[in-house]
Structure formats: structure tokens, C-alpha cells
Amino acid sequence: MHEQAAAGAGRARQQLHTGVVLAVGPHALTVQLQTDRPAVPACVGAGILVQPQSGDRVVLYVDGEQAWVVALLELASGHDEVQLSVVGAQSLQLQAPKLALKAKELAVDTERAVLRTGLLQFSAHVVKAVAQRLSVWADLIHAQSQTTIVRTDQRVTQVDGADILRARQVLTEGEELVRIEAPLVQVQGKENVFVNGKRISMG
Image 1 (cartoon, rainbow, N blue to C red):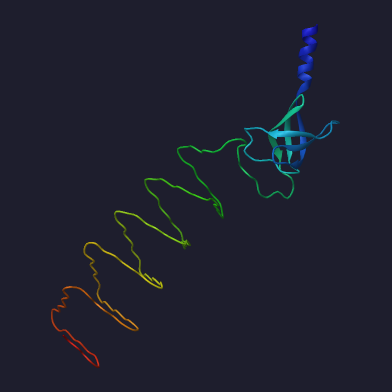
Image 2: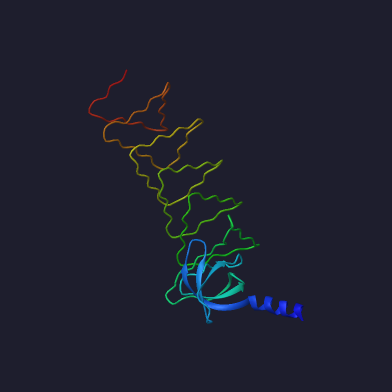
């Protein structure tokens, strides 16, 4: 009889309740149970990825003086944004043979991002990159476009090997000065070479 009474008391202390989140604190929630009991503090269970907010309807597991939110039943009216996180964990890993993200808008806010992949493809109508400094390292860079426009205050290009430019027409314009300087400068035309200027100095 005493063992049955103790077991019954234990079951009475361990119960599932529904309630509404009244407040969200830094370490615990305040949940109003749908019973005659007053509001109780509760921790968020480790299996809850969607973090409850004020007004959300939740399931609470109560064990004596301790309580945990074990399920989120309904979001409060007006909550159009949810937060995914694991309480107490330092990292969250998603692993599957294939992952797909579909959204009209995707925003990533982080101090550091690292992406490692064998093949990376971008397909977009417009791609914009804004940075104080942009560095690119590659064994081969292949770029193809109908029109390329580069505008900068100053450009420095250093080529250790050969710099080869092939074009149907080459036009170089300088507002103040165009200078070619090297130990040896060779100008070669298959037919005619024209040099035109108000004053031509040689030597």
C-alpha cells in the first residue's frame, strides 16, 4: 500500500500541462498553466528548435518544482517570425544527402562565413558584392561577358610572366599622359605605321 501511494504521488508530481508563455527571460520562461496553479518558471527543452515567445501556446512537463517546455502547439497572433536554436548547444549541424532552402528573401548576418565545396554555381539576374577589401586566389580565372566596365581611381596590375592582349581593335586614351617604358620597346605593323602629333620628338 505504501509503495502504491508513493508511486501515485510521483505520478501526480510528474504531469503534462498546456499553458501560455507570459514572459521570456534570459534563462527561463514564465508560463501560465491552464489550471488553477499560478504561473511557473520553465526551461526550454533541448529538443525544442523553435524558441517560444510571449503569447505562444506550449506543452509543459512538470516534475515537482521543475518544469520544461517540451512542445510548441501554437504561435501567438502577430508572430510572423520564429527563431531556431538549441538551448545550451554551441553549434547546430544540418546533415542530409540533399538540403534545399526556398525563400523569397534570404539574409545571413554573421561575423565569419566559411564555405567549402567541390563546385559552386551562382545563377542570378544581378549579383552585387560590397566590401572594403576583396581578395581572390585561383589557379585559373575565366571570365566571359558581352561588355566589361571597370571604374576605379587607381589600378595596379603586376604580371610576372607574359601579358597578352588579343583584340580586333585596341584604343588607349589618356587625358594627360600615356607612357610606355621598358628596356626594349618594339612597334611592329604588318603594313603601315602612322604616328601623328603636333610635335614628335625622338632620341
